[in-house]
Amino acid sequence: MSVRVVIIGGGPAGNQAATHAARLGGEVTLVEREIVGGAAHLWDCIPSKTMIATGGARSFAARAHAMGLFPREAEVDGVALVQRVAEIEERINRSITELLTSQGVRIIKGTGRLKGPREVVVETETGVEELAADTIVLSTGSRPRIPDWCEPDGERVLTTRQAYPPPEFPEHLVVIGSGVTGVEFVHMFSSFGAEVTLVVSRQQVLPLKDAEVAGALEDDFIRRGVALLKGARAVGIDRTAEGVAVRCDDGRVARGSHALLCIGSVPNSEGLSLEAAGVEVDDAGYVPVNQHCQSNVAHIYAAGDLSGKLPLSSVAAMQGRKIAEHVMGLHTREHRHLDYEKAASAIFTEPEIADVGLAEADAFALGRKIRVTKMPFAASAKALINSDPRGFVKILSDPATGVVLGGSIVGRHAAELISVIALAVTCNLKVTDIVDSLLVHPTLSEALADAAE
Image 1 (cartoon, rainbow, N blue to C red):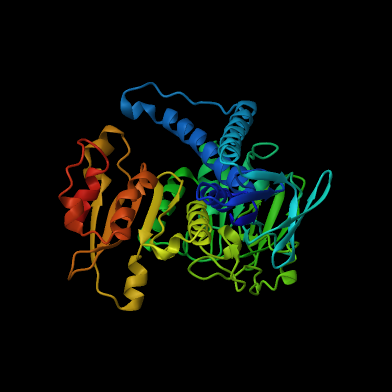
Image 2: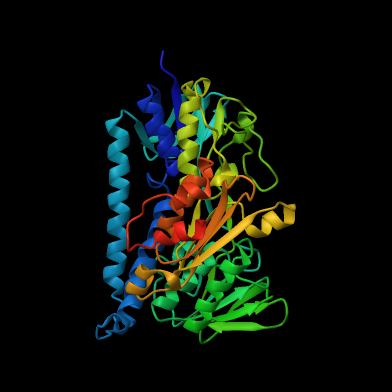
C-alpha cells in the first residue's frame, strides 16, 4: 500500500516534496490556493531578480565607454518589463505544473486546513473536499510583515509584493529596512534612475553580514548617490502633497515620492487549524521542526518559511526533498541531514554578494582560530576585461587542518562563484583542493584558487 501524502502549499518546499515523494512511489496530492511554484517565489523572488537583471543591463549600457563603446542611456519600457516578468512567471509555473502532473501528483486549487491529525479539508471554487492522509506536509510560506504604524495603500506606500514593478516608477523611493530585500530594492530602483533614500536602523546596511562585505555595498550605494539614514528607525509614514514623509524615531524625516516596506515577513500559519491536529507553533507563528522537518506530531512536517529556518528558496526545496526521503523510508539508509549552517546565500545587488558557512565576525565572537585569506578582483584579468574590478573573494579555513570553513564573495557573478566554496564547506574539502584545481583562464573563478593559497 502506497503512502498517502497531502501537501498544503505548492512553493519550492511543497513542489519538491511532491515530485520526490511521487517519484519514490507515494500517492501525492498538492493543495495550492494561489500559484504552483509559490507566491513568495514567483511573485517576489523571480520578479525581483528579473527586474534587477534589466536594471543591470541598463547600468552596463551607461558605462559601456569603459569597454570601447559609445555609451547609450537605455530608457525603461515599463510595459515591456511587466510583460517580461509575467512571461517568466508563467513559464516557470507551467514547467513545474507539467512536471508534477507527469509524475501523477494530483493538484487541487484551493485553501487547505487540518480537520484532524490525518485529515485535510480543502475549500475550492466548487465546494469542499476532505482528504485522508498518512503524511501531511505544511509549506504555506510567508507574507510581508506590515507594522502597526503603517498602512500600505498600493499606490505611494508599498509592500515588497506591490513593487514588481509598482503602479508607477518612483522618482524618489524611500526604502525602509536594510536587510537583504531592502538593499536589493535600493540597487534595483537606483539602477532604473530613481533617487533612493535608505532608512538604516543600525550603523551598517546588512547588519547580519560581514562588516567588510557590508562596507563594500555601502561604498557602491554612496557612489550611486543613495542617501543613507543610519541609526534611524521608522515609526510612521504620512502621505503628503508631493508623495510621502517617513518619520524616524530620532526626529529625522525622509521624504520621497514613494515608500517601500522591507522589514521582514510573517509565516502563513493562521487558518491552517493546526490545533485540530495538535501541531504546536512558537510565539512568532512558526512551526518548530526537528532535523527531519517533523513537527511535534511525527507524521506532520513543516518546510519553507513556515518552519522558521533560513528563508531561502534553495533551503525550502532541499527541505522538501529531505521530507520525501524521510516519508518514504530512505533515511534508514545512508542519509545526510540538512545542515542549515552550510547553506549558501546571495544578494543580487551590484556588485553581487554571496557567502556560505562560518562568518569572520562569528568566528571571532566564538574565540575560534581561523585563517583568513583574500584576493581582490582588481588583480583578476577577467575582471579587468569585464571592466568591473570591484570586490573580492575571502576564504576562511581551519589553520590546523586546512579545511574550508566558509567564505564571502563581493563582485560580479558572486552568486555563481560561491558554489565552489559551498561545495568545499559541505564536503569538508581543504584549501589545497581548491588551489590544486585546474581552472579555466581567464575567468573570475581563478580568484577562488588565488584566495585559497
